[in-house]
Image 1 (cartoon, helix red, strand yellow):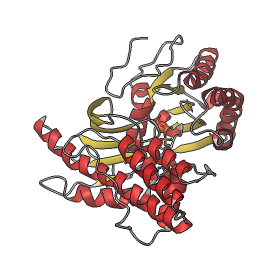
Image 2 (spheres, rainbow, N blue to C red):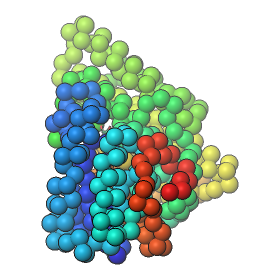
Image 3 (cartoon, rainbow, N blue to C red):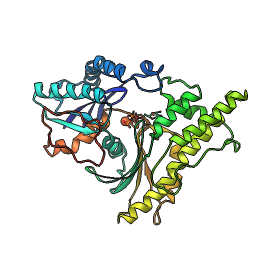
Image 4 (cartoon, rainbow, N blue to C red):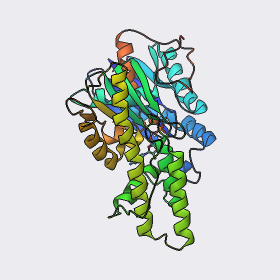
Length: 355
Ligand code: ATP
Ligand code: FE
Protein backbone atom coordinates (compact mmCIF):
# COMPACT_ATOMS: atom_id res chain seq x y z
CA UNK A 1 0.00 0.00 0.00
CA UNK A 2 1.70 3.22 -1.20
CA UNK A 3 1.10 6.64 0.38
CA UNK A 4 2.06 10.07 -0.97
CA UNK A 5 2.29 12.61 1.89
CA UNK A 6 2.56 16.41 1.87
CA UNK A 7 3.81 18.64 4.70
CA UNK A 8 3.96 22.46 4.95
CA UNK A 9 3.25 23.27 8.62
CA UNK A 10 6.25 25.57 9.18
CA UNK A 11 9.16 26.49 6.91
CA UNK A 12 9.87 23.27 5.01
CA UNK A 13 7.94 22.23 1.90
CA UNK A 14 7.93 18.43 1.91
CA UNK A 15 6.60 15.50 -0.11
CA UNK A 16 7.38 11.82 0.35
CA UNK A 17 6.28 8.39 -0.82
CA UNK A 18 6.29 5.50 1.65
CA UNK A 19 4.97 1.91 1.41
CA UNK A 20 3.28 -0.13 4.11
CA UNK A 21 6.24 -2.55 3.83
CA UNK A 22 8.36 0.30 5.31
CA UNK A 23 10.11 1.29 2.09
CA UNK A 24 10.84 5.01 1.81
CA UNK A 25 10.62 5.57 -1.95
CA UNK A 26 11.35 9.29 -1.78
CA UNK A 27 11.79 12.06 0.77
CA UNK A 28 11.87 15.59 -0.63
CA UNK A 29 12.48 18.48 1.80
CA UNK A 30 12.76 22.01 0.46
CA UNK A 31 14.13 24.32 3.15
CA UNK A 32 13.34 28.04 3.24
CA UNK A 33 16.37 29.05 5.34
CA UNK A 34 17.56 31.58 2.74
CA UNK A 35 14.19 33.37 2.95
CA UNK A 36 13.91 33.67 6.73
CA UNK A 37 17.52 34.22 7.70
CA UNK A 38 17.25 38.00 7.87
CA UNK A 39 14.32 37.72 10.31
CA UNK A 40 14.54 36.48 13.89
CA UNK A 41 12.20 33.57 13.04
CA UNK A 42 9.90 32.31 10.30
CA UNK A 43 8.22 35.14 8.36
CA UNK A 44 4.65 33.75 8.00
CA UNK A 45 3.64 35.54 4.79
CA UNK A 46 6.86 34.70 2.96
CA UNK A 47 6.59 31.10 4.18
CA UNK A 48 3.08 30.76 2.66
CA UNK A 49 4.21 32.27 -0.64
CA UNK A 50 7.19 29.93 -0.82
CA UNK A 51 5.11 26.81 0.01
CA UNK A 52 2.58 27.86 -2.66
CA UNK A 53 5.33 28.25 -5.23
CA UNK A 54 7.24 25.08 -4.37
CA UNK A 55 4.59 22.48 -3.50
CA UNK A 56 3.84 21.33 -7.08
CA UNK A 57 7.54 20.85 -7.84
CA UNK A 58 8.09 19.04 -4.54
CA UNK A 59 5.32 16.56 -5.45
CA UNK A 60 6.78 16.11 -8.94
CA UNK A 61 10.23 15.41 -7.49
CA UNK A 62 8.80 12.91 -4.99
CA UNK A 63 7.20 10.97 -7.88
CA UNK A 64 10.28 11.20 -10.12
CA UNK A 65 12.68 10.11 -7.36
CA UNK A 66 10.41 7.15 -6.54
CA UNK A 67 10.08 6.44 -10.29
CA UNK A 68 6.32 6.34 -9.85
CA UNK A 69 3.22 7.79 -11.48
CA UNK A 70 0.06 8.90 -9.66
CA UNK A 71 -1.43 5.53 -10.72
CA UNK A 72 1.01 3.84 -8.34
CA UNK A 73 -0.23 5.88 -5.37
CA UNK A 74 -2.96 4.26 -3.25
CA UNK A 75 -3.70 7.17 -0.88
CA UNK A 76 -2.78 10.73 0.01
CA UNK A 77 -1.88 12.06 3.47
CA UNK A 78 -1.09 15.58 4.65
CA UNK A 79 -0.28 17.49 7.84
CA UNK A 80 -3.58 18.80 9.18
CA UNK A 81 -2.04 20.47 12.25
CA UNK A 82 -0.65 21.82 14.48
CA UNK A 83 1.27 24.55 12.70
CA UNK A 84 1.00 27.99 11.14
CA UNK A 85 -2.54 28.33 9.75
CA UNK A 86 -1.73 29.76 6.33
CA UNK A 87 1.18 27.37 5.84
CA UNK A 88 -0.94 24.32 6.71
CA UNK A 89 -3.51 25.38 4.11
CA UNK A 90 -1.02 24.87 1.27
CA UNK A 91 -0.45 21.11 1.82
CA UNK A 92 -4.11 20.67 2.79
CA UNK A 93 -5.39 22.18 -0.47
CA UNK A 94 -2.86 20.39 -2.63
CA UNK A 95 -3.63 17.02 -1.00
CA UNK A 96 -7.42 17.44 -1.18
CA UNK A 97 -7.35 18.53 -4.80
CA UNK A 98 -5.15 15.62 -5.86
CA UNK A 99 -7.22 13.14 -3.85
CA UNK A 100 -10.65 14.21 -5.11
CA UNK A 101 -9.55 14.53 -8.73
CA UNK A 102 -7.89 11.10 -8.71
CA UNK A 103 -10.48 9.47 -6.41
CA UNK A 104 -7.90 8.44 -3.82
CA UNK A 105 -8.49 8.08 -0.08
CA UNK A 106 -7.33 11.08 1.99
CA UNK A 107 -6.08 11.26 5.59
CA UNK A 108 -5.14 14.32 7.70
CA UNK A 109 -2.28 13.73 10.16
CA UNK A 110 -1.26 15.30 13.48
CA UNK A 111 2.29 16.61 12.93
CA UNK A 112 3.44 16.01 16.54
CA UNK A 113 2.10 12.44 16.56
CA UNK A 114 4.00 11.93 13.32
CA UNK A 115 7.26 13.19 14.94
CA UNK A 116 6.58 10.75 17.81
CA UNK A 117 5.85 7.72 15.58
CA UNK A 118 8.86 8.13 13.25
CA UNK A 119 10.87 5.61 15.29
CA UNK A 120 8.26 2.92 14.64
CA UNK A 121 9.13 3.21 10.94
CA UNK A 122 12.88 3.69 11.03
CA UNK A 123 14.15 1.55 13.89
CA UNK A 124 14.63 -2.16 13.19
CA UNK A 125 13.67 -2.83 16.79
CA UNK A 126 10.41 -0.95 17.40
CA UNK A 127 10.20 0.59 20.91
CA UNK A 128 7.59 -1.32 22.91
CA UNK A 129 4.39 0.47 24.01
CA UNK A 130 3.75 2.22 26.29
CA UNK A 131 6.79 4.45 25.89
CA UNK A 132 7.66 7.92 27.07
CA UNK A 133 8.42 10.30 24.21
CA UNK A 134 10.28 13.59 24.41
CA UNK A 135 9.24 15.91 21.60
CA UNK A 136 11.65 18.80 21.22
CA UNK A 137 11.16 21.04 18.22
CA UNK A 138 10.75 24.62 17.04
CA UNK A 139 7.22 24.92 18.41
CA UNK A 140 6.97 22.27 21.15
CA UNK A 141 8.64 20.80 24.21
CA UNK A 142 6.63 17.90 25.58
CA UNK A 143 6.86 14.58 27.34
CA UNK A 144 4.13 12.31 26.08
CA UNK A 145 3.13 8.83 27.15
CA UNK A 146 2.50 6.91 23.94
CA UNK A 147 0.12 4.03 24.75
CA UNK A 148 -0.37 2.99 21.13
CA UNK A 149 -0.15 4.55 17.70
CA UNK A 150 -3.43 6.37 18.34
CA UNK A 151 -3.43 6.98 22.09
CA UNK A 152 -1.26 9.81 23.44
CA UNK A 153 -1.27 11.15 26.99
CA UNK A 154 0.42 14.49 27.72
CA UNK A 155 2.66 14.31 30.80
CA UNK A 156 4.52 17.65 30.64
CA UNK A 157 4.89 20.65 28.38
CA UNK A 158 6.60 24.02 28.41
CA UNK A 159 5.23 26.87 30.49
CA UNK A 160 6.68 29.42 28.07
CA UNK A 161 8.73 28.97 24.90
CA UNK A 162 9.77 25.83 23.04
CA UNK A 163 13.36 24.64 23.42
CA UNK A 164 14.04 24.85 19.65
CA UNK A 165 12.93 28.48 19.67
CA UNK A 166 15.29 29.17 22.62
CA UNK A 167 18.20 27.53 20.76
CA UNK A 168 17.40 29.71 17.72
CA UNK A 169 17.21 32.92 19.73
CA UNK A 170 20.38 32.27 21.73
CA UNK A 171 22.17 31.35 18.50
CA UNK A 172 21.08 34.69 17.01
CA UNK A 173 22.30 36.53 20.16
CA UNK A 174 25.68 34.83 19.67
CA UNK A 175 25.79 36.22 16.13
CA UNK A 176 25.28 32.87 14.38
CA UNK A 177 23.55 32.53 11.02
CA UNK A 178 20.94 30.07 9.72
CA UNK A 179 23.30 28.55 7.18
CA UNK A 180 22.17 25.34 5.50
CA UNK A 181 21.19 23.47 8.66
CA UNK A 182 19.64 26.29 10.72
CA UNK A 183 20.47 28.21 13.91
CA UNK A 184 20.09 25.31 16.38
CA UNK A 185 22.62 23.18 14.50
CA UNK A 186 24.96 26.20 14.26
CA UNK A 187 24.79 26.59 18.05
CA UNK A 188 25.59 22.90 18.56
CA UNK A 189 28.58 23.27 16.26
CA UNK A 190 29.85 26.38 18.11
CA UNK A 191 29.43 24.63 21.49
CA UNK A 192 31.44 21.65 20.21
CA UNK A 193 34.44 23.96 19.67
CA UNK A 194 34.55 24.83 23.40
CA UNK A 195 36.96 22.70 25.36
CA UNK A 196 35.83 23.79 28.84
CA UNK A 197 32.52 23.99 30.61
CA UNK A 198 33.56 27.35 32.09
CA UNK A 199 32.33 27.39 35.72
CA UNK A 200 32.38 31.22 35.81
CA UNK A 201 29.46 31.19 33.33
CA UNK A 202 26.56 30.35 35.64
CA UNK A 203 23.07 29.72 34.33
CA UNK A 204 19.91 28.94 36.31
CA UNK A 205 18.17 25.57 36.60
CA UNK A 206 14.60 26.32 35.60
CA UNK A 207 11.51 25.22 37.54
CA UNK A 208 13.34 22.72 39.73
CA UNK A 209 11.03 20.21 41.33
CA UNK A 210 8.30 20.69 38.73
CA UNK A 211 7.26 18.66 35.73
CA UNK A 212 6.79 21.67 33.46
CA UNK A 213 9.59 22.91 31.23
CA UNK A 214 10.59 26.57 31.05
CA UNK A 215 13.17 28.20 28.81
CA UNK A 216 12.53 31.98 28.88
CA UNK A 217 14.52 32.51 32.09
CA UNK A 218 17.46 30.54 30.72
CA UNK A 219 17.42 32.64 27.55
CA UNK A 220 17.27 35.90 29.54
CA UNK A 221 20.18 34.81 31.76
CA UNK A 222 22.23 33.80 28.72
CA UNK A 223 21.48 37.18 27.11
CA UNK A 224 22.65 39.00 30.25
CA UNK A 225 25.98 37.16 30.12
CA UNK A 226 26.44 37.86 26.41
CA UNK A 227 25.62 41.58 26.94
CA UNK A 228 27.98 41.79 29.90
CA UNK A 229 30.87 40.15 28.01
CA UNK A 230 30.24 42.42 25.04
CA UNK A 231 30.30 45.57 27.19
CA UNK A 232 33.53 44.52 28.86
CA UNK A 233 35.11 43.66 25.50
CA UNK A 234 35.45 39.96 26.39
CA UNK A 235 33.17 38.48 23.73
CA UNK A 236 35.90 36.65 21.83
CA UNK A 237 35.15 33.64 19.61
CA UNK A 238 36.33 31.44 22.43
CA UNK A 239 34.01 33.08 24.96
CA UNK A 240 31.09 32.73 22.55
CA UNK A 241 31.84 29.03 22.23
CA UNK A 242 32.04 28.66 26.02
CA UNK A 243 28.70 30.43 26.48
CA UNK A 244 27.12 28.22 23.79
CA UNK A 245 28.42 25.09 25.57
CA UNK A 246 27.11 26.22 28.97
CA UNK A 247 23.73 27.18 27.50
CA UNK A 248 23.42 23.81 25.75
CA UNK A 249 24.39 22.02 28.96
CA UNK A 250 21.77 23.92 31.02
CA UNK A 251 19.03 23.30 28.44
CA UNK A 252 19.79 19.58 28.21
CA UNK A 253 20.12 19.26 31.99
CA UNK A 254 16.54 20.46 32.25
CA UNK A 255 15.44 17.73 29.82
CA UNK A 256 17.23 15.12 31.93
CA UNK A 257 15.66 16.41 35.15
CA UNK A 258 12.13 16.32 33.71
CA UNK A 259 12.64 12.81 32.29
CA UNK A 260 13.27 11.38 35.75
CA UNK A 261 10.23 13.23 37.11
CA UNK A 262 8.03 12.13 34.22
CA UNK A 263 8.89 8.46 34.76
CA UNK A 264 7.75 8.90 38.38
CA UNK A 265 4.58 10.69 37.23
CA UNK A 266 3.76 7.78 34.87
CA UNK A 267 4.06 5.40 37.79
CA UNK A 268 1.70 7.57 39.84
CA UNK A 269 -0.75 7.22 36.93
CA UNK A 270 -0.29 3.47 37.10
CA UNK A 271 1.82 3.07 33.94
CA UNK A 272 5.39 1.83 33.65
CA UNK A 273 7.01 3.11 30.43
CA UNK A 274 8.91 0.32 28.67
CA UNK A 275 11.21 2.58 26.65
CA UNK A 276 12.06 6.21 25.96
CA UNK A 277 11.93 7.98 22.59
CA UNK A 278 13.20 11.42 21.59
CA UNK A 279 12.25 13.16 18.36
CA UNK A 280 11.80 16.60 16.77
CA UNK A 281 14.49 18.90 15.37
CA UNK A 282 16.35 19.44 18.66
CA UNK A 283 16.75 15.65 19.01
CA UNK A 284 19.34 15.83 16.21
CA UNK A 285 21.64 17.38 18.84
CA UNK A 286 24.36 14.81 19.61
CA UNK A 287 25.18 16.23 23.04
CA UNK A 288 21.50 15.82 23.95
CA UNK A 289 21.51 12.22 22.67
CA UNK A 290 24.55 11.26 24.73
CA UNK A 291 23.25 12.82 27.93
CA UNK A 292 19.68 11.62 27.50
CA UNK A 293 20.69 8.03 26.81
CA UNK A 294 22.79 8.05 30.00
CA UNK A 295 19.99 9.61 32.07
CA UNK A 296 17.39 7.10 30.86
CA UNK A 297 19.64 4.24 31.91
CA UNK A 298 18.84 5.02 35.55
CA UNK A 299 15.59 7.01 35.31
CA UNK A 300 13.48 3.90 35.88
CA UNK A 301 13.67 1.68 38.94
CA UNK A 302 13.86 -1.69 37.20
CA UNK A 303 15.65 -2.41 33.91
CA UNK A 304 17.52 0.52 32.35
CA UNK A 305 15.24 2.30 29.86
CA UNK A 306 16.54 2.15 26.30
CA UNK A 307 16.27 5.38 24.28
CA UNK A 308 15.23 5.29 20.61
CA UNK A 309 15.96 8.16 18.20
CA UNK A 310 14.93 8.53 14.56
CA UNK A 311 17.80 8.98 12.08
CA UNK A 312 19.00 12.61 12.10
CA UNK A 313 17.39 13.56 8.78
CA UNK A 314 13.97 12.34 9.94
CA UNK A 315 14.02 14.26 13.26
CA UNK A 316 13.39 17.61 11.56
CA UNK A 317 10.31 18.19 9.43
CA UNK A 318 9.67 15.76 6.60
CA UNK A 319 6.73 14.11 4.87
CA UNK A 320 7.96 10.53 5.41
CA UNK A 321 6.70 10.70 9.00
CA UNK A 322 3.34 12.04 7.78
CA UNK A 323 2.91 9.14 5.35
CA UNK A 324 3.82 6.64 8.05
CA UNK A 325 1.52 8.18 10.69
CA UNK A 326 -1.38 7.90 8.19
CA UNK A 327 -0.64 4.26 7.35
CA UNK A 328 -2.49 2.63 10.26
CA UNK A 329 -5.77 4.42 9.56
CA UNK A 330 -5.50 3.90 5.82
CA UNK A 331 -4.90 0.16 6.20
CA UNK A 332 -8.03 0.03 8.37
CA UNK A 333 -9.85 1.71 5.44
CA UNK A 334 -10.50 4.87 7.48
CA UNK A 335 -10.42 8.15 5.59
CA UNK A 336 -11.27 11.83 5.93
CA UNK A 337 -13.76 13.82 3.85
CA UNK A 338 -12.56 15.98 0.96
CA UNK A 339 -13.90 19.05 2.79
CA UNK A 340 -11.33 18.62 5.59
CA UNK A 341 -9.78 21.81 7.00
CA UNK A 342 -6.43 22.56 8.72
CA UNK A 343 -6.37 22.50 12.54
CA UNK A 344 -3.66 24.99 13.52
CA UNK A 345 -4.06 24.29 17.25
CA UNK A 346 -4.52 20.49 17.15
CA UNK A 347 -3.15 19.20 20.49
CA UNK A 348 -1.39 15.84 20.50
CA UNK A 349 -3.82 14.32 23.01
CA UNK A 350 -6.94 15.76 21.38
CA UNK A 351 -9.19 13.29 19.58
CA UNK A 352 -9.50 13.57 15.85
CA UNK A 353 -12.36 15.99 15.13
CA UNK A 354 -15.24 14.61 13.05
CA UNK A 355 -14.99 15.65 9.41
P1 ATP B 1 7.04 21.83 15.43
O1 ATP B 1 7.39 20.45 15.04
O2 ATP B 1 6.96 22.05 16.90
O3 ATP B 1 5.87 22.36 14.68
P2 ATP B 1 9.18 22.63 13.68
O4 ATP B 1 8.58 21.60 12.82
O5 ATP B 1 9.44 23.97 13.12
O6 ATP B 1 8.28 22.78 14.99
P3 ATP B 1 11.43 20.91 13.72
O7 ATP B 1 11.67 20.99 12.24
O8 ATP B 1 11.03 19.61 14.28
O9 ATP B 1 10.50 22.06 14.28
O10 ATP B 1 12.76 21.39 14.45
C1 ATP B 1 13.34 22.64 14.18
C2 ATP B 1 13.99 23.15 15.46
O11 ATP B 1 15.05 22.26 15.83
C3 ATP B 1 14.59 24.52 15.28
O12 ATP B 1 14.23 25.33 16.36
C4 ATP B 1 16.09 24.23 15.27
O13 ATP B 1 16.88 25.27 15.76
C5 ATP B 1 16.19 23.03 16.17
N1 ATP B 1 17.41 22.27 15.91
C6 ATP B 1 17.77 21.68 14.76
N2 ATP B 1 18.99 21.10 14.87
C7 ATP B 1 19.39 21.33 16.16
C8 ATP B 1 20.56 20.98 16.91
N3 ATP B 1 21.54 20.29 16.36
N4 ATP B 1 20.62 21.38 18.20
C9 ATP B 1 19.61 22.07 18.75
N5 ATP B 1 18.51 22.44 18.10
C10 ATP B 1 18.39 22.06 16.82
FE1 FE C 1 8.05 19.65 13.26
